[in-house]
Structure formats: structure tokens, C-alpha cells
Length: 195
Image (tube, rainbow, N blue to C red; front, side):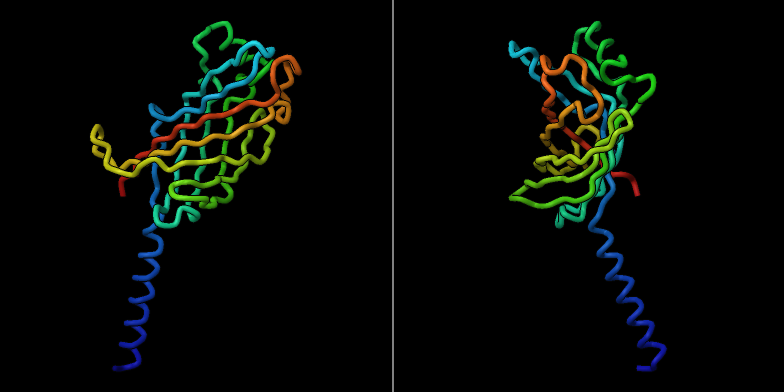
């Protein structure tokens, strides 16, 4: 084989290997109608208050064979907070809590993913609320990967839990009577982007 042919063959093999390696990571777009962040916090020791954010955008770069190579970036519109009680919603949107006029979004950016078991993992990242960024760890479960029978798109689904201290982000209203610790329950669906 001539030297030029050998170089060409090696180049083709390298490009094929690179393409196959990159092909493992697939981009998915968050499906906002089936994605939410629910929060639960103790209220005076009598009960637990809860609500959710339901205006969520972002994407997931997902490697199903090697989840540790995956990553995600999520944006939450803070005016999408709902509790089912209008006055409570308005208060949560005020400067006492999320100050949505001055801080329209909260963000989560993953930094590292570790696999802890079958379909289980920890997602380490940064969450930004009221312009303050702090580390957070999500305990995540990979639910399913399949073609969605409703929209005929390849779809993935995840569930996750985490907790934060709201005072870390400057939200100190009614402390300590209303709990500092806020538990989060996260549900995510994402559709594969068209290539």
C-alpha cells in the first residue's frame, strides 16, 4: 500500500472513531409541560408548605451508555412559581422571597455526574438564585428512554431530589419560624432534538 493510501486509511479510521465517540452524547430539549421543580418547607412546625416552578427551559446532553459523560443546563423562570393560593404566590414573587421583578430566572448548571447504581446517580452542580450561586447535589433516577407515543419523539425522563438552605441565597423572611431548609422534588422530561 502506498504511503498516501495508508495515511488516507488511517485518517478515515480516526474520523470514524471520533464520530462514533461523539455520537454517544445526544442533545435533548426540556419538555416544559412535563417538567417541574416542587419545593416543600416546614411551616411553623404545624404543617408543610409546598409549591412548584413550572416554567422551565434547558437542555440535556445525555450519554445513555456512560451517564457520567452527560451534562445539563436548566433555566427556571421565577414568575412561574405556583402554590394554588394567589396571595401566597404574590408574596413569594415579592422582595421577601424571589423578587421576580429584579431576578427573573434561577439557573442550574451541572458540573459532574457520578453513577451510584442501576439507573441511579448524583448530579453535582451550581444553582443560582437571586444572583447568588451555590453548589448543590441532586440524587437522580433515570426513569426511561423511549419514543414518546404522543409526539413520536425520542424522549428521556428523570426524577431527582435535593435540598437547599434558602438563607444561603439571601431569602431570610420569617426565619426561623418558617424553615430554612427547603426540600426539592424534580421531574424532567426531555425530547431529542432533530438532527
